[in-house]
Image (tube, rainbow, N blue to C red; front, side, top):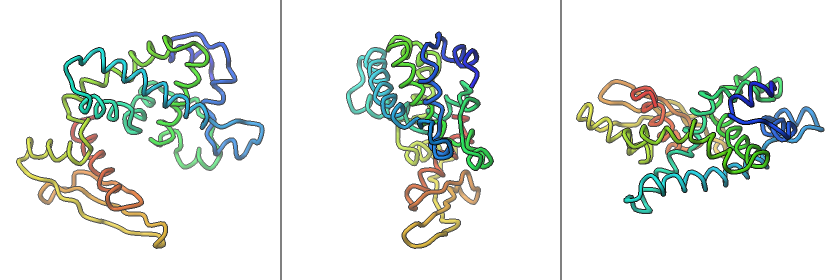
Length: 227
């Protein structure tokens, strides 16, 4: 971890280096190095801080929106998919401490790991520099995604968002097909494709057909809209 680089990325001085070492320590690394602490506790804290500050921002900038819409917008902004996008843009993945196996499997680019490290970073930044530093960081990184979410209707669930997009662009409702099914009954893995007409627009995997369909819709929106 390069503290100077990380400090510049966060836009603030880092005082407690050990906090950020913990924030960037994946559980796979901690399993190999018993003296290292993984980032799950900081992730827990960061999740709560993130939800509060995003809620405050939405409350202030969208004074006429009802509670239901604000809730959906917040969910879209703090979704794992959204946080992973921002983590990649900021370059947080380069600081991750991963096991050898996770490193080889491309852990630095995996959305769930990146989303988790974003939340853990928020937790560490909150403890190290306070809520104002977190707010300034979010105003530079995550909160600018709000116009994209509104324009792309990404605050709808991914399947609804892609259906609306598909109907508007092609006047067609997308369909989902199971492409593959593997694993034992208690641990199934489904691969689903989403099609507009005969063209496959996206692919997703999940432990259920529904989760795989949601993943396929998210990937289709990302490919079509660049979100």
